[in-house]
Image (cartoon, rainbow, N blue to C red; front, side, top):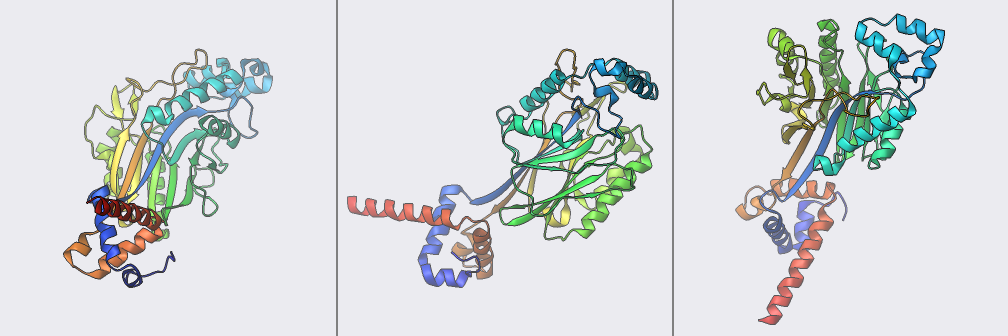
Length: 385
C-alpha cells in the first residue's frame, strides 16, 4: 500500500473494514494497540584496550610486561602522575589473554539473557580503538553496525556505538577544543522516523569543573542545531558527582530546562552506577538525556543494571571483575491508540494521522493480516452455527 494513501482513500476502499480493523486490533493488542520501542544501553567499559601500542597515545600501562623492559616505555611510565597509575604503568601485565578475558567479561554482562532484553543501541565509553571494538562486536554477535571516530584523547579512550540499525548518514564528532574529548553524533531510522544519538564521556572530577560545563553547553548548542522533528538522545558517562551537583547545580541549570533526565528521577542516595570508594557514596555518573521538544510523546523507563553488590574493576591477573561502572539502560515507548477516534466519531483528522503513522511504521500489512484472520474466524463461526 502506498505511503501517501490518505485516510479518505482507505475509508472509501475498505469501508467498514477500517473500523473493524481498528477495533479488532485494539481488542487483540489493548488500548495502546501499536507501540514503538527503543532500548538503549550505555556502559563505561573502563579501559577496553588491546595489547599493542597506538602511536601518539599514552597506552603504556596496557602492554605486556615483557615490552615494558624497553627504555622508551620505562621513560614514559616515569612521566605518569600518581602512585597508583605509575605502578600500573610499570607492573601491569596486559597480554592478549588479558584482552580476551576482558572481552568475555563484558560480553557476559551484555548478554541479552542476562539483561532480560536486547538493546538496539550500545553506547560505550573508554574504548581504545576500532580494532578492539570489533573484537567485542564479534563476541557479542548481535550488532552488525559499528560507529567510531578516532579522537585526540591523549590516553586513547574514545566513545563508540554498536547498533542493530545502519547509519543513515556519516557519523560526526564535536568537541569544545581540538584536544578535548569528542561527542559522537550518529543518526538512525527507527520505525519511519529519525533518531539522533549523542554519545558522551565528560572529563572526570579530577579535571576543572569548567570542562564539564563546556561540554554541557555544547550539548545544548547541538540540540538547537538538530531539527526538533528528530528524536534526540544524549547518553554516556557525565562524571558529575552528587557533591558537585548539590553545590553547583550543573544539571539543574544547564540540562533540566531542555532535557528529560530519567535516571535522576530516583533520588535514593543508595542507588547509582558508580561507587566512590573514598566518599563511600553512590554517584549517578551514567545518564541519558532526552530532548523535551522531540521526546515529549515517549514514555521513559530508566534502569541501572546492578550486576554485583558494587562495580568491580577488571583485574587482568585474575580475570575477575568487569568495570568500575554499572551499565544503565533506557526504554523509550511511543504508543499509538487506535480505534478511539473511530468509535467516538471525533475528528477524522485524528484517525487520518494515526493511519498515516501506521503506514509509515510499516505496520499496515500486520493489521491487514489480523483483519484477514478475523474474517476467516468469523466465517468459520458463522458456518458452524
